[in-house]
Image 1 (cartoon, helix red, strand yellow):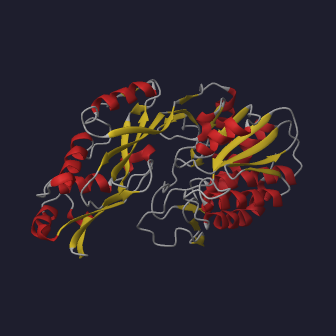
Image 2: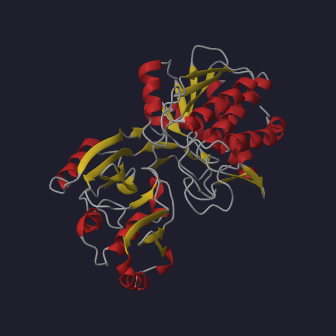
Image 3: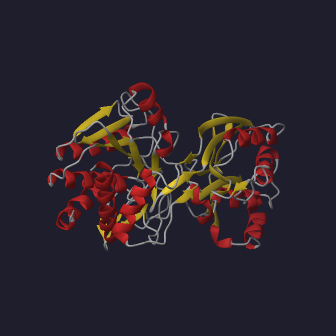
Length: 456
């Protein structure tokens, strides 16, 4: 079918709705009554459901954990799995990360790419099918989670408490085009140790983000040693310090990136620890620095932990230290590993625990997800590939594997499909996250064609 006019007419309202949804700071916060992940994610879910309801779709909110937006009739169900929560804004923004600014042919704001822009693109694709009365034989249901960026408790609640009808086929617009048929396993864990001394150290914000900043307090008398260490470092520009409250505060600047692509980032915590190892630090802080550099350092693939492995389908295991902080007399380290699809998560977990045996650090699993694999010649993958190729004319790109972890792995016959285009700048989990309006139009064309082909 020819959807050209409907797509053109949808662009302005779609961009406006993405802007509206991105103005809601939906970083996970402290739980409140009826808001299991804080006020922001609940507000974002309610706003998205409100948009769907205004379009004439059936909506349902499951206690602000998950929401549904559904259209059509038929025995079979096509699922679209996305999320409305986001990672913290981080530093380095040139505009308000919660402004939803539309300027210079782009929408600027946290969530434009991950994942508010993509889910609303799919919503508008549904709207076009509805408005044009396109004959379909299957129902379409957008499933919106509110805690994807942390530990997926939203989907756990959905699957175990709501116990919904599950889709026959599904996709998650939370990755890249064309199709991700395999996703690496994911192991996220927290390392803690008791702290008796007054240590002020922090950096990063989430398991799955490379920290863009970190800071630590040091004694004033260490200033000359600090100056020397900075001047002799590989990149002095990433370090700065100031005197405050009778202490030196060292700031380290990194480059944020998603843990699935941590090679694109520069971990501020790791480079801070590297610099601190050159200083005459004593006591528990010295112990922390030594542990960090012995077990992690600036490496990305778990070599120092003894977990460096790889396979042909998905490549090398990665290890990201996403956050460090002290709270209630404990040092906390948030660790994120993406595990090759051919290896059981338990095998890596055993190696981590063995490495930590005499370290003095306590290991606790925060999230553990097995890998995803859907054959390339399956109906789902081939249909989505055909839709992508029909719209883009790209016959060279092939189904791929990824270190990303999407909702696709929560159910059978589900893969990640879009929305980042092969030549599109990836600013997910980074400062100045933005979405080009020209790419948004291509997104809409691809998603519309894919949903139509799956549901017709």
